[in-house]
Amino acid sequence: MRTPVEGFSKLTKEEKINWIATQYTSNPEAAKSVLKRYWNTNSSVQKVHDEFIENTISNYYLPFAIAPNFLINDTLYALPMAIEESSVVAAASKAAKFWLNKGGFKTTIVGTEKVGQVHFMYKGDKEKLERFFKTHKNAFFDDAKTITQSMEKRGGGISSVRLIDKTDSIENYYQLHCTFQTMDAMGANFINSCLEQFAKTLKQKAAVYDRFSSQERDIEIVMSILSNYVPNCVVRAEVSCPLNNLDEAGLSGIDFAKKMVQAVNIAKIEPYRAVTHNKGIMNGIDAVVLATGNDFRAVEAGVHAYAAKDGRYSSLTHAVIENGEFRFWIEIPLALGTVGGLTSLHPMVKLALEILQKPAAEELMQIVAVAGLAQNFAALRSLVTTGIQKGHMKMHLLNMLNQLGATEEEKEILVDYFKDTVVTNASVKEALKKIKAD
Ligand code: MEV
Image 1 (cartoon, rainbow, N blue to C red):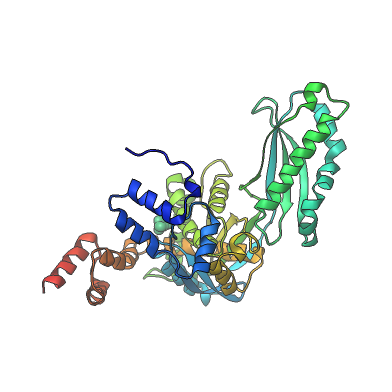
Image 2 (image 1 turned 60 degrees about the horizontal axis):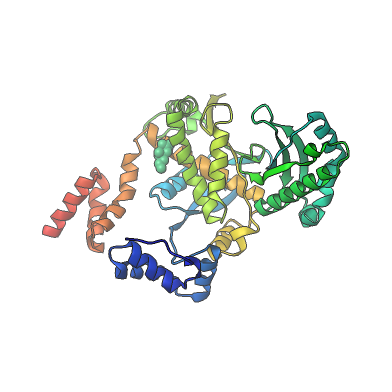
């Protein structure tokens, strides 16, 4: 019978490991050995990881890979990707190579505005609140000066603070809807600090506003928090080429382009397909976002909300055939940072940013959007020609062989054998069994 633990966070790492291994695993010694095997032998590196979060007992590794040959706005990049799914890096590399001699990827920043809101309850006359807000609007900027000073020096800061009436949805509910420019920082701490100051200013000024009744003075702050929905922090990435330069997998350029456009159009109108279509895009996006130390959960949440912005969940990419050309593009919201957060703390993140030539946040947005577009191109190219299982199972072959305990020699023989044999769980098992028996 398990009992709740008191003061777990105060235990030493060794004690935490002992506790979890004995309480929750069937073979505590084996569990301890796995956890310790993944410790970094360099104690200063381990310490960095221990201190990222609470209750760290080990490290959880993901492969860190490179997808080379991305030509973006005439500059060559090698993309660092942290991801566990086989085929993703191979697909990205293939797409990069495909577009390398066709002009590469072109990108533009559409906007870089971040958002945050103070949610509050005000019981009283709406017009008085509006007058109060007009009178005190400058105080929100003035009172936050100590927070905004250094961001302003870098060219950013608070762009706007607006009062929004939400009482048609929830009784007495209003917001301060605020926008920010956070330059090379993702900006979460900056935005949240500003918002908490706005909430204080709002409460303080309201408490002494002589036109308010005593009930109106008593504004109730519900919460102050940034939004991960950033529909005006958007980047666009695009590829295009003449149809006669596009023939692929035995299809003429026009036939291949038509199939690609059909595939995108299906994802535009069919949510079941759109979710998978966009998942493939996020394979590329998350991998670069993670490698560069950015918050992939924030990116995921914002991207999927954007995919549903017109009232139906839809494709993030678009494709057309126009004037004898195939054009394929993505428009996606990405709130990313290249300073602050993990960027200076995690040695692999630092290295990833160095590999990308220390990009500004806007440049990283463009690179990440390209990773998403390339991934979608590669997935659709397979789907509308050979199907994805052929390439996917080939990539998965090594995972299967490792799981089945194949030796290095057996792996080599079987990788060669499966070059022209269909890979399935059964066929791999059977072939390995045969070799082992020989
Ligand atoms: C698999 O991780 C991603 C794909 O399913 C994406 C797609 O279907 O477009 C291949």
